[in-house]
Amino acid sequence: MEDVLKIGEYTLNSRLIVGTGKYQTLELMAEALEASGSEMVTVAIGRVDLDRKEGPNILDFIDRKKFTLLPNTAGAYTAEDAIRISRLAQAAGCGNLVKLEVLGDKKTLLPDTLALLEATRVLVKEGFTVMPYTNDDPIMAKRLEDAGAACIMPLASPIGSGRGIQNKLNIQFVQEAVSLPIIVDAGVGTASDAAICMELGVDGILMNTAIAAADKPVLMAEAMREAVIAGRKAFLAGRMPMKNYASASSPQEGLTIKS
Image (cartoon, rainbow, N blue to C red):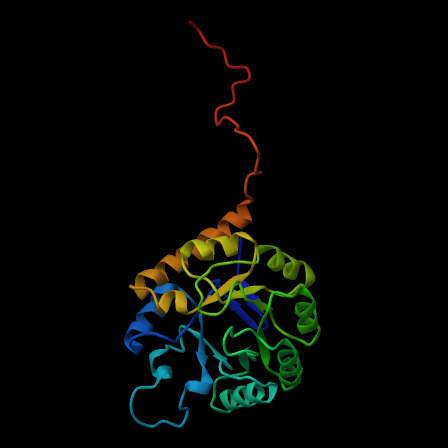
């Protein structure tokens, strides 16, 4: 059975999207990307010198034949800034795909959803495939869908917190509100967090810090790859019902015991 992730015109076999920030070296980043099994990687375009002619550039360490580049608007605090960064990325040859972030608070890094919605409408009209990072509000999720977003990317917990999924019920509400792919973005800290997210039936996960800040990023990338796969398989398999009391693994009914 084919089980792929479709975001707009893009089809991915891996349901893990990874970031490229916070690594100690660009070489280590490249190793971790390879180990993750991901097919889409996100880059903060606002922090890349697109005109740089000499010296290492993060884009030189991303194999464009293996990975779909997902420019993001990290650092934007207004709709205007996010739109400008998106246009710069497109003009630099990064395509029409964008992970849209419009932050509203420097302490929590929570999104400004009104500005996010405004930027989504503008960029969709310009032909962008918009993947918006948003809160876990099903009402805003529906508005983003109506605005033409290609998926919905609700947070599991604050960016870079590593606290895992804190809002299972809200994620469920978001899933019920829209017909778009749901990509959990932000908050995953370790492999068990990734598996739990996937077991909820979300379509994918985007993570950066959980891998980049690990003691052994390449090994953690492998763990995350396997956790996402395991969580997806568990969701498709359908978990057993939970009960309040014990139920013997070997039923006793009809069992004849000879003395």
